[in-house]
Each structure stands twice: as structure tokens, then as C-alpha cells.
Length: 344
Image (cartoon, rainbow, N blue to C red; front, side, top):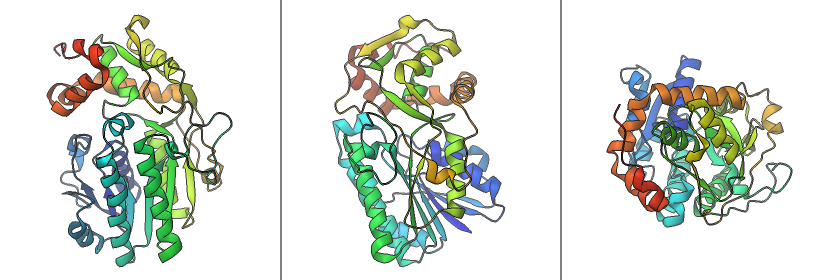
């Protein structure tokens, strides 16, 4: 089977590339990634000479390139996206272009070349906030920020290609992922790396926003199963049903790195901040999937990884101008201390 993986140098994508190559001895993978700030070939250094893996640097909005790659593809797993809510609040244009138009280019070329499976990776954020209970796949989409709206648009565009053209699309909506190799703008890697350096942990509002946490390897195992067993045209929620408030996660991180609670600094909440996410994943579980990682074990593994891979995250935090500029702009005075980086 020939796979086109988009965004395979990113956090979830790189984990999936490794899993797919290990699981399927006949899999041949082309990884298409533009290598924007969150794409990182350091996540894939062990695959540089792998005979069944090929990396192509390019944009999913480049129709000529995508058409050429799709002509030699049997199945697509589409991770590539602008995915950071905070950045979408400052400017949505890149999100609309990549998440919606880029998805259109992939769908249109997949239709042209009769691709046999198209897995579109969406997010629980398309549902909006969940005041009680859990969201099911049939619930209405009420995205509350530009990122979520761009993903909802792409999600529904993918479904339209199933209904209109019978393209065998499967849509997945996962909850908050965490684990090794996650770019340090998201809550867990940001707070772990800040705490290691005795820097403030900027908690939005009261910190009681609840998220449904999913270890990245469980997400990837679900995708592997869906490649084989999913029904075309269906949506599948992916959740380990492990809810925790942001403050709980913050406290758990501080305990694991042996740092004081005084590092926590509450900051103004972001606009349109959803209060709670929670998913019903019974449709996926009916296919035989179960998560293997509980939150305690997953956090142990994740924090340990960042503690033992300082060179990976310091390379981003110290040398990547985009990370530094956004952090300083977004967190304001809190960030003034952040670039007094402690030496290795």
C-alpha cells in the first residue's frame, strides 16, 4: 500500500509515520510537509535512509505537486494544518488557506486519482464547548475560534466529497493530544520546559478549563485501526475519556519536575476560550479500539522525555525566532524573563 501522509514531520504525524512503518511491512510512505515552524525533521532522523519512506518538502496548497504525488498514492492520512488556537486569534488567513484550501486540493486530486482511502484528521474543537455530557459525532458543530472554524470547514468539505463524489473519506475528531516531540507552544510541553527553567507558567483565567486528554500513541493506534476498518463517510471521535482541568495538569507537571506552585501565574483568558471538551468515542471502540495509556502514565512518559531531551526543545526555544517572537507578543510581561535561558 502506498500512503501519502501530510504533515508527517509534525507531532502526531511523525508518531504515526513510525507506527505505520512498523505495523505494515508493505507500507510505502511519502511524507509531504512544508516544514513551517512546527514541522521538525528531528522527529524523523531515524528514517532518513529507510527504504520504504520518502520525505518531500512542499505545500498542500501546491496543486501541481500534490497531483504528482497523489498519482502514486493508494491512501491518504491528512494531518497537515495550522493548529495553534492562539495564533489564529491574531490572524486567521494562514489557517483558512492551509486548513480549508489545502484540504480541498488534497480531496480534489485524491478524487482525480481514485484514492482508496482518505483519512481527514479533524478535532474536538469543531463542536465548541461542552457544558455537560459528551459530544457524539452527530452533534452540531459550533466552533468558537478561527482555528476551530477552519477545521470545521475542512471537516465538512471532506464529507461533501464523500456525498457528492463517493470519495472514500473518513473523518476523525480527537481530543487534546500530548506526548513526546510536541512543539513547545501547547500547554503541556510549554509548561514542562518553562518549569525546568524556573520560568512562570502562564495559566489562562482561573485555569479550570477542562480538556479530554489523549496520549499520542493511542491516537495513532486508533488511526491505524480506522485505515483498516472504518466505514467510508463516517466520523469517528477519538478519546480516552480522561478529563482534567488545566490547573490539574499544571500541578501534575510541577510535581514531576519538583518545582514550586509559585511558578503559576494567572493571565487574562484568551477570547472565545471554550470551557470544556469531552467526546463519546463509543463508535470507534465498537471496532475494537481501547486506549492503552492512562493520564498518569502518559504524563510520566511525557515529562521524562522532555527532561531527557533538552537539546530537542532548546533548539526550538533558543534558536527559533518565530517561537520567541510569538511568546513575547502573546504573554507580554510574563515573557520578559523567559529569554534568560539557563545554560545546559
